[in-house]
Every structure is written in C-alpha cells, then in structure tokens.
Picture 1 (spheres, rainbow, N blue to C red):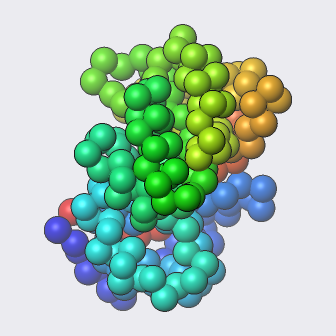
Picture 2: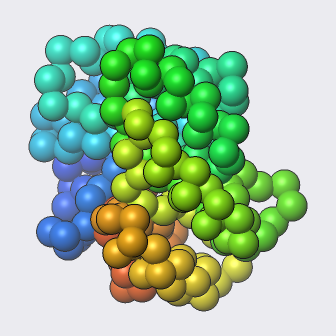
Length: 218
Ligand SMILES: *Cc1c(COP(=O)(O)O)cnc(C)c1O
C-alpha cells in the first residue's frame, strides 16, 4: 500500500532536519510512492532506503532515469532475496551472519560487482530482532575480509523501541571505534526520525529518516 500524500513538504522537512555536512542522510522511502522520491531527488537528495525487496524493485525500475540515485537496503534480508538485493541495491546495511555475507558475496561475484555493506548489530540484544550480537562481531568482520565482492564500510543499528537510545548509540560508537582502524570502517549508521539528533551527537555519521521527511506511513 502506498499513500499519495501530495502535495508534500519534503523540501522544508529536509531543511528542518538540519543534518550537519559530515553526516549522510538516507531518506527512508518505504511504503512511499515514486512521485515523492523523485521530488526529493529533484531537491538534491540522492540516498534512499528501502526495507522490502519486492516493494523496492518496481520503484527502482521506475526511477532508473535518476542517474545519481543510490538505493540502500535497510531491512531484514531473506536468503531467497539475496540475488535481487545484489542486483538492485547500491549498499546493503543489514548483513548479520557469515552465511548471509557468503551468499551476497556469491551473488555479487556473478554480477561482477563490489557491494558496500554495513553489519547490523543487535545492540539491545533483543531476542526477536535482526542484527548480530556484538560478541560475534569479530568472527564476522574477519570472515568478510576473505569475501572479495563485499566491501565492509561500517556498522548499523536499530536500538530497542521505547528505550532511551543514547546508551545504545554510545555502545555502537565504542564498537565502531574499536574496529574502524583495523578494518578501515568509515560509516556508522544510526538514528531515525525520533532520535537522529542523539545519534549524531553520539558520533553517528549516517542517519536513516523516513517519517520526518515523507510523513507518517499508512
Ligand atoms: C523505517 C526505518 C527507518 C526510518 O524510520 P522513521 O522513524 O520513519 O524515520 C530507519 N531505519 C530502518 C531500518 C527502518 O526500518
């Protein structure tokens, strides 16, 4: 389902976010129509985030003429969707297992493509949540080193709902700092509409914002 809440305030909304220059804004366009994405693009926004492969592909196809657009996959990646993700996306932010990394690497090798990726950390150690537990991070980053068609750029998280995000962002920054030199990481993706200011204050340099740009999702 897409809601066509036109006309929009996208330009004003993005401006009001006041994202600092050193922070990359990913506009999360899940469940939003191509018209709004195109409008944001025409205002200078280049990076867009989608959660569902099957919803994203028709939009990506329709917007092929926007030459500089970059698509970030930010949802849970099912193994039967890995090939499509490899084909259609420019960055995968939700790698959380060796198996998934291997599959994506194979798919990218077939396409002769190097895929930038982030590892999603289950920073609240929640049972029913995607992401790798931080104890297993070392094994995963080490393994990814051997995968020639993946380029590990950094870490991503979605902190637990209804909790103070700040402490989770602090933990993420500590992890990021621990790994960044040895593994050449440069992206720490954290912060959404409700908490992006806190995320930036705690050292995040990529925020993923949907509602505050495009309005509520139906
Ligand atoms: C939906 C979503 C966002 C954006 O959330 P808003 O609260 O609408 O800004 C960011 N990251 C992920 C992984 C999401 O699924």
